[in-house]
Length: 176
Image (cartoon, rainbow, N blue to C red):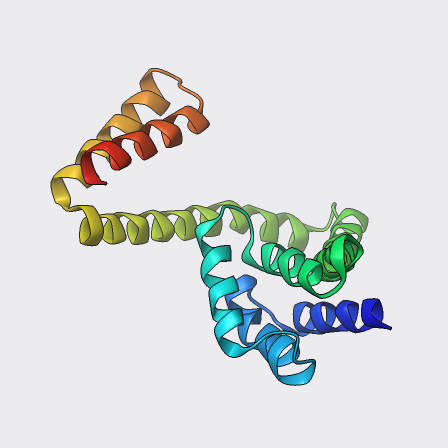
């Protein structure tokens, strides 16, 4: 029964919560803390803080951790599957629909708008990161890291993972 409850606790927020991790966090809290009582509000807040500190989508990290705390490894697997399945199903349906109508002029026009929208979203995200960096590290350090990253990525063709590691080392040694 616990696995079914875990599945529902993560499936329902992910199927009705549009907007990704930040949009479903309150729904997850209502299930995990309010409905099932698996955690306190403080424990949930600490799990959320830990999840935000690690890379990858927040919802899957929280699902894995909470599922493990509630029912061990099998609970973690069930909770993560319940988190991923709604997006997977919707994506498969959308891809099937787009593939079936790929020759449609409407679908072609829609596809042409995807790239500029993504570019604008990425620019907005970059601006947000820049502003956050200025607030926490200051303008000089932010510009040094930014310019070094552009040079390394564009001109030197360094793999992005190495650029991130270099930025982390810079931050740990000079800003730590």
